[in-house]
Image 1: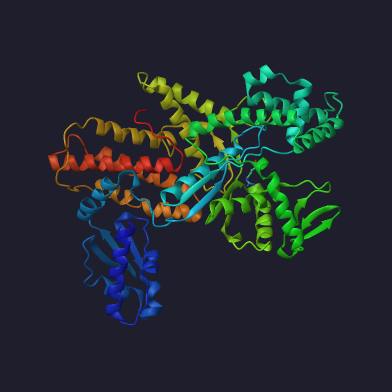
Image 2 (image 1 turned 180 degrees about the vertical axis):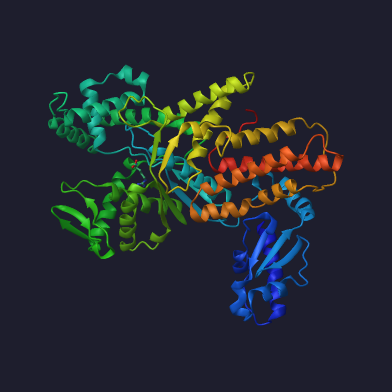
Length: 578
Ligand code: ARG
């Protein structure tokens, strides 16, 4: 549609110049003024003429009439002036002869605005769980929003580096080591994986705190021990380092399973531990620049002037903090990847943290501070489904996925009991349902998961759109002959489908501009609705003649490309059968 909009805009400008030669309007600006009318009867695009009434010193209805006079363009079949609006109808023939072949030619790269990112690099920091703490549904946001943003940027021609900034350093490892030495069992952990580590972690925390109700006395001494064990790690104690590596390995193996279900791979797993030796130089720079103040023994950067609490750099005992590491990591990444943009995806609870250390980077004189972007999202909760967890109140991501997969299997056993590779399909549909449901909302909104809704096959769900994709595949599977013929668009449904498909590029641009994967989710729904309407209203394989049949098959193929491409942008796997 962008190309169509551009040509319409140029034509409007040409007409405006005919009214007043001196009028100055830029094509891009004018393209931005074109609207999609709420009601298709009003046309496919509308141009509100009141925006020009000042420039032209004319009343909007007069402008609309003057522009529509002699407005001729091959991609437009009709223009009408209504109440100061120019209503524009796109030509069906053009859709069939120009848009459809373009989609078929570009296949899954149709709609890719590769001019946007050409020669530019983006690093994306996302998922980044804290090792040995539970990987819970709160991590769904950073993981799928982060990966979608990566896919979107890649689609737009950027070189992308996905970084899993593992929380693999810190006093929690001291705690884990103490717990392991007290209660751990090597074989059990090797067998039970991360769950056993989380168990140990939960147990040590509970023991340190104690539990009055249960008459368990608090053991704060264990916290001191944990600090000592972590200190040993910091000075390279072999035994502790070996334990730490083992804990990280076990955790990673577990995360990988979840990432694989989502089809996610990272380019780097440099976690917090990697930056240990990179922090002193930045701390030194802060000190030299006179940016650091001592406050109650701790070193801070005062941000009062900017309306924020101070950014903590060093604790009283000289140890570094979360912001210190983020600053060092950003400097390292800038040097390593020469990024044009660095995106961090975390929950909205970290908004202040990012604002603070971004400011510190600016104060440190790094002129790339404005290339740092924090993308927050709302909280995720779950009700309706009671998930038994071994770890207290949190719902583990893998348990949520497992439950969704199991439910899909149940549905499939009823609907399509003979399906081959049903394990694979159930995983794609189950996990896809969760992802889709999650990404239907604006990212900043809090969301409450309802598994029944997410898994429903009707409604605006993952299973519904995956079913639609499978439908395109099953139609195409039945076609054996060569179906190239003359393209003829003979119905509103066919035209409406093409008009939806050709909005892809615009939607991708909006999604990138707003860092909002839900734009793509909604686009997928629009395509699915338009395709299903077409499918129900127009007979495809039994169409009245060969040209109509061929055209409808091509439309189905075009839909399959666009849906498949859009699915991959939101980390949803496609499945040819359901
Ligand atoms: N590990 C952190 C957490 O789970 C998220 C890290 C986000 N990335 C960053 N560069 N701070 O809260």
